[in-house]
Length: 113
Image (cartoon, rainbow, N blue to C red):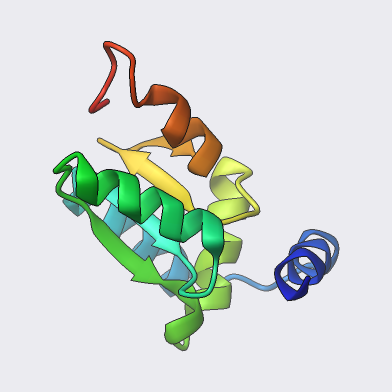
């Protein structure tokens, strides 16, 4: 329930995003083949991490709820890519999407992306 309320709040309330947060997000995406922005308590994030681990995909994860700039970084992702929820998963700089998008790729020729 908290996650749902948080997502509603996050979608409605404008947030000032610093250039540093935007640059940090872009640097993480550019320097990791598979990059996931996550929250440690999110069941969808856990499902995505489980799938990536089970299939041997090498990825980097940032737990946005565990770092000071997490909210700003999530705002930067929303601003540039329109992704308001986590997980926000990127492959070679392109947004894959969230957990359902990742799960739908599992048994396709596109796996692992």
